[in-house]
Image (cartoon, rainbow, N blue to C red):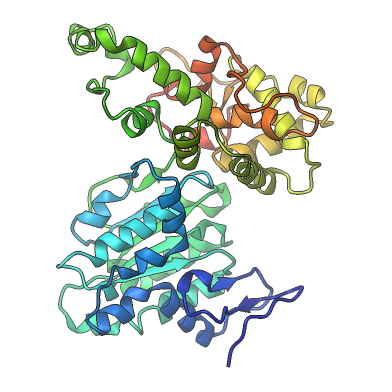
Length: 444
């Protein structure tokens, strides 16, 4: 009988309670055995057993911890980032979805799994959900092979494609090479694949290995970024009585059409102003929005979660004050082109190279966004300094909430002026779209 044990190097372990969400893996030098992978897949996909028993394949939602956690802080917001996969035709598409930690990527995949399992045209055994945290490339390679065995009953049904939901797969070194090989040489090439991750690593070569000729024949965006809620999303979730104007491109804000759309809202300007101030007070992380809407403030626990994410991804060995100090310094300078050398001296980091490395990691984990200077025709201005914007207002509040010896208690106003805060909280106003290149590195 397999039992739950924890050691200094626990490796792969089982919980005695037969639920997929308590089945864990830890990073280890030992690869997973095939029997461990089979058990892991069976427990992670409870809808397989339900379908075989002709039971409700969506009943697992009621007991899943991630969905129960969302129910505690639910204001009704649902990302539509993969709705075309959850509700549209099952094709050979491959989509890579990235975004910061704590933004809800795993929940989005679980929602997609539930929607797919509830569709009359989809056999629940077509859906394969894999939580890839702690896996190695060898483990992923075996998952792609062994995952087809317990779902082989669908192979007798013509036209049935598998739908692979690979959660946090970007944490595996060499993951794109594994998927590339499978798309080139196995039936995996005909399946739907959704791969998510919290880091954009240039070494992964997502473009070359996956999106160039291996992303399927279905039209649609192949690279998708799940980012914090926009102010529009915030108003939709927390001010349901406020009408929303049609979307307009910034270049059209002075057009007659925009004037007509806004004229209908002239008597609710104050309501929108208050909503904007509230948005600047909590940002767009879904849990932060819910806590602020329900409790009036973002909890210390959520700030601690965000700090842990940033510390682990940027500088795990840093002292506790390092990340809050970095964010505080960047917040004060983000309205102007960032002088990396001067900023390194201010932070007493020691060298431009060390700070550049940390900034690259901050951007690759979706904590900030580079906005390079551009020429009149839109090309990056070679040799110029870029601006660096924090991705969400919550990251500006964080230093005063968690910094060792930092000032401020809950309830203080935004640390920046409304004009400056607006620029910080809405970096989208300075760009037409988030591109992969802007998320990696500024021009030097």
